[in-house]
Length: 469
Image (cartoon, rainbow, N blue to C red; front, top):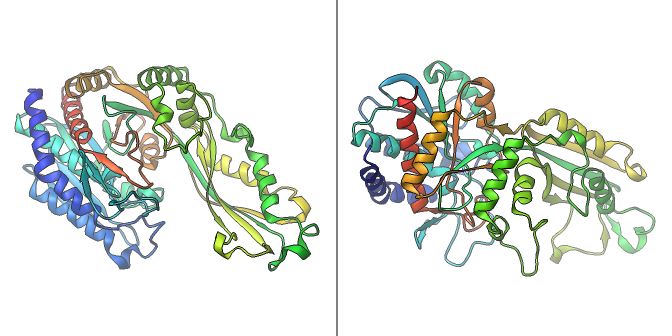
């Protein structure tokens, strides 16, 4: 492999074709089904799928097939089959659906308007992870440019990942014969600790979502008349949250949500902490004077990848400030999002949280915790020597530094599904979501140079897979 030639090829393809097409993709408000229940009527997901299909057909390799697969009442799935020199299968994964707009975008930026600024492409979904299909195919085209063999490759781009991939299992079952059993899975939907080296994800946390609802009255009552007689639904909710989270440290108090951290993951987190230093917390947009929960980068990495955590991500029953009158409100509802360490049984965790919150409600209030979804995490299998060597070589070739391994605090349901279905499969989970890239929030961006380098690294790993012994 001529790595200089490969890098030049990838860079040219990104500049000439990938970035312009990603700009078109960002303009499509194809929010995931959870955020747009009328996605089918609106047609945005179909537009995104067709945009990707059209680009792939225009850049097809010999013998390659491109198809939008549609199951009844499911979001579409893009299925690409690229012939190879061996009978092995490499499965490359990404998704086309997006998170909603969110608020707080900087002046001149917005979710559905692509903006190129200082080598970064701003807008919703470019980095998370619309680039995946383009990067995957460019990687294979870069190998073809030099006649470098690779295994048969299947590129699979789903349409419901941001909603927990509810449609994906049906597609995996329906396409099982066409996919076969992959010996390598490449996922381009993860984070990178910095933009200076190749980052490989070695674990993902699971996610438990639910709504805690506390009701105390049938209707709101003047606060001067009711307070002191009727306990506040918000105070009761605070007390219930105290059953599951230490308010001073954030530690989760329910044993079913904890697990032991493997020593290998601790050592990898320590290595990543040495590389990243204070940037582990400095990448966060803290307000002035705000401090992280710890000053130890290794502790922060473990906290965000192997510790259970709770975030309150939404509320109901609480008027906006301008509409808040002197009323003791009848109820408080809170959307709870728990991150679960790899290895924790998500259903058991959900039952434990539900029982903890609903038992013996204070003052006999009406308390319910309705589980929306419960997904387990993922811990990568031991990396085979060929893959470890290939990732290291690729990082040195295209980043000029060693590859690093790090857990990610988010969830990619597909990884857990595949690991259970194909226990002998090797995984390369990586991505372009580095510091300040802010997926799901305002000012999301794709660092274009990192996208190019990750694409080149994927090409080298796929080539090494075909040569492994």
